[in-house]
Image (cartoon, rainbow, N blue to C red):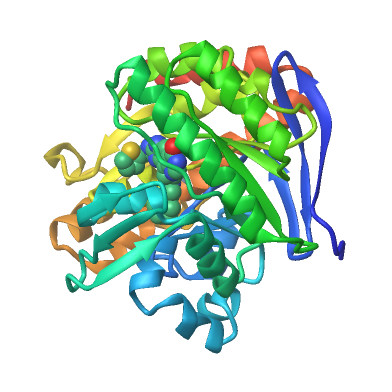
Length: 373
Ligand SMILES: O=c1[nH]cnc2c(CCNCC3CCCCC3)c3[nH]c(NCc4cccs4)nc3cc12
Ligand SMILES: [Zn+2]
């Protein structure tokens, strides 16, 4: 078991790369999709089920865990891996993004952010230093810098000043992180949709030096076309030999387009959250199991899928348990969606390794165009 954190690119096809991130807690095959484990659980899934879908790594949520049960309590209980019974790699976010999108009564200064908990209104403070301390208490393997993600649309001055604040916070994050062999710290590129600010941000991060580089500030309402337009240049400013993590993405076609443009890692609540709302993602598009058209349908969600939901249950059953708000509904649809997202990642890893990414992408889009049967 390696005691260090390292990344090796094993094959490329155009800008797309496939490789492995080695960590003391196990390998992460890239391109990788990271399921979100918000309050120390991937909702409606046991950890062994998450592993069975093909996940090598999952996300822990600093904002939620610092409020409840607190990072100190998780540390006293042996850390997040032990607490949630997941012994493979965990990436934790810095908490900054969620503070800005979930909490109220926030005050943002150069120092950091003070805010009130959305749980009980108690007062809290986050800064690069406090975020590093919390993520260390949680014991995560990949730590994210404390950054600010500006809401779009924003004018160039706002984008520039926000990005420069995040770069100062990145330097403070690195300083506070210290030297932790086997643990990684990822910087986060900002700069909105602006080529010059993306380049300035990448240069600042490379100067500081990180184990991996995230692309932040996207998937915040700009739409797929503008996101792809930005991804046509933003990853290229980052080091080739380090992992690139696109934050908060996305729908299956967003994920494919991002990998095509050189992204190695992604996270999104979509497969788990939409599973709980009855939305199934399949190779032929989305299936809303709530729709009456499924009530008598004996077929599986997706006859090609090997997940437990598709192997053992009919659409009629899934329709019934969703309508009846049975707990198994969230379990089966979440399992299916995570399984399908991991299948897309495995398909791309194989296609890049075989130099057939273009053909794989064409088949991916043609099949979705057929629509659900
Ligand atoms: O610049 C960013 N800096 C830091 N985090 C970002 C995130 C959160 C990524 N998922 C964290 C997870 C941690 C564990 C709990 C779940 C989130 C983003 N998510 C999105 N889009 C999806 C969006 C989600 C919500 C609104 S937009 N763009 C993002 C941009 C940034
Ligand atoms: Zn399935």
